[in-house]
Structures are given as C-alpha cells and as structure tokens.
Amino acid sequence: MLDNRFAPQERPLLIRNATPIGFVGALPPRVDVLVSREGAILEAGPRIETGEDPRVLDVAGAYLCAGWTDLHAHVYWGGTDISIEPAQCGAERGVTTIVDAGSAGEANFAGMRRFVIEPARENVYAFLNLGSIGLVACNRVSELMDMRSIDIDRTLDVVRRNADAIVGIKVRASAVITGGWDLVPVKLGKKLSRILKLPVMVHVGEPPPLYDEILGLLEEGDIVTHCFNGKQGGSLLEDEELYRLVEDAAARGIVLDVGHGGASFSFDVGAAALARGLKPTTISTDLHNRSMDGAVWDLATTMSKLHALGMRLEDVVEAVTRAPRRAIRRPGCERLAPGEKAELTVFDVVDGDLEVVDSHGARSRLSRIFEPRYAVLGAEAISARRHRPESGGRHSCPHCGWLS
Image (cartoon, rainbow, N blue to C red; front, side):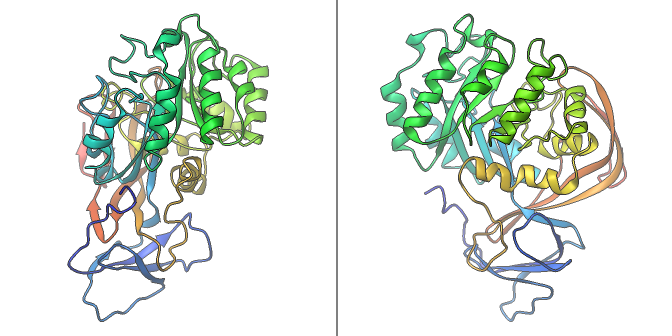
C-alpha cells in the first residue's frame, strides 16, 4: 500500500533542461526525464522527443535530484501535542519522503497509520517509540518513566504487523525524559532492534545517559540524532574524547543525523566538526510545532545552514537523498533508470541574504540558499517553496520576493 501512492495522471510528464546531481551512474550535464502516466520513469537523456503529448515542465537548468527525505520529523498531527501535518513539511517544501521519529508508540501507532501515513501525499515512514504512549504530551508526560512505560511483546508485534511502514525503534535518551534511568532504555531499544533486524535511532541530549556511553552500544546502521547538539555534557566542543568517539562511530557505520530541532543544533559545534572533517551522514529537521516557526523552518533552510558551515553541495544533496534512504532501507529514485518510480526534487541554489539562528539563538547570515521548486511524485509535479516563518529571521532574497 505504501509503495503505490502515486496517482495516475491523464498525460505523461516531461521534465526538460534539468541539471542532474547526486544520481548513481553517468548522466549528461543537462537531462530530460520522461515519466509515464502511472509514475514510472520511461526515459532519461539529453533531449527527449516523444509523440505522447506530455505535460512539459521546463526547469531552465535547475538542479534535479532524488526526492528529498527528512529522516527526523514529527507528523502525527492530532495524536501528539507537538506534531505538524505532513503537508506542512512535505511536497510543498520539496520533500517527498518524511520519516516520523517516534511520535507514536505501540499503543497509538494504529491511529498514525490510518489517519496520517495512509492518506499522506508524501511517503511517510516511522520509527516506533520504545515508550508505549509515544509523544502524546511531549516532555510533559515522559514516555520512558520506568519499565511500566514499555511493553516489549506489544512493541515487537506492532513492528512486525506494520513492516511496510515502521523502519526502526526510537529512543529518547536524555535526563529530561528518562530521569535517572540512564542507559536502560537504550539497551532495551537496541535489544529490540537486534531482534527485529532494524536500526535504532537514539536521541542524545542532556545526560544522563552520556553521549559517550550511548555510542558504545550502537552498531553499523544505527542512528544518532542531534549529533551536533550544543548541550552541556553532550557537546563535541567540550570534550576531545567524545569527539574521537563520534569520529570512530562514523567510521564504524553509525549514522550521524543532524536532527536540528528547537534545542539540538549548534552552529559552533557543526562548524568545528566540519572543519576537522567530520560530516553528518544525514541532514534532518526535527520539525514540529515548536520548531517550525522558531529555529528550523524547513529542510531547505537546514540544508543551507550546513552548506554555509562548509559542506559541499554534493554532500548536502547526498545527506537528504541517498543517505537517509539507505538508513531506512528504502532505496529512492537513485539512477534515473527506466522502470524506477519517479520520486524527485527540483531545486535551485540562489544568492541571497538570509538571517537564521541555531537552536541556541546564535545568529548567522546565509548568502547561498537552497530553494525547492518542485517535488515530483510519479507523474505529478507539485510546486514547492521554502517555509516563510511568521516570526524570526530577516530575509532579502531577490529570487523569492519575500521580505521581512
């Protein structure tokens, strides 16, 4: 069901004059892509002529890549007090796949599936929260108070019965959630992930447990989200030994995920890590209703921040396309090959002057800004643009016509 959400269109779609980036295999500098009415790629090449009378989308040299994937967001709208709707951070922001990071636990996942995942235009997957209630009342009622918060049998059953939608286990491991329970939830989450043969995503924050100790429990394919947080006791800037442990974890194949959020990304930490050659594996937003109009805004702005801190354009694209799809074991449109389902993002990188903040209020100005133009889901091309926050930030970009 989840892999067949592209609605057939009346006519094929022909994307013209795109600059391909991030795909597997050699492609010309400019490419046309023909997509069938049913949403499969028919042909990709330097100039396509067809008698099928397609709808033509001339993107005038804009970049074309596999669909942007946000590995960490919260979209169980109505099921938690922090979640937004998929449409608020999805196709209209250039994002074709959203991964919800633990909004639902075993006790309420059925509602998320029926009322959020299945109706969404975007592809929506989920990490199931180890805590049975998920984030119903986020940080007001902890989902991991003690062992009574976890039902191992029911959690395993829910994951197995929803294997098409659930991509792993999520554990929020910080003192504000677990109190003095320390590493026990991480150990339990890791045990379940081994049984299920799925990754565990661990939120690192205020200790205990220590970021250092969490890394020692993880294996190749597991995910550390909020990897560049600037919190006391969990910052790479504070502790050279922790930095080396994170570097070693990346070398072992542990996924380092940005997970920006309202409290978990520091410009200083990110800049210092990138200056020493430590890149995040994936760039994600941790978007929710407390971060969207605050520090984060959307995936394109988060990508722009990492680009400004020193990540190459190609690495930023990799971190929102192929890398997150590998992390959830759901390959996307990587080759522009005939027969692949078309899941693509068209974007520009434009000159501008945009004032942004990190999660700690530190300000920075961006001169190069990722601007989504279209999200392509099958033969449907959905117009996209960055989120314009109701407050916060100063923007004077001549390309999008928005000033504040």
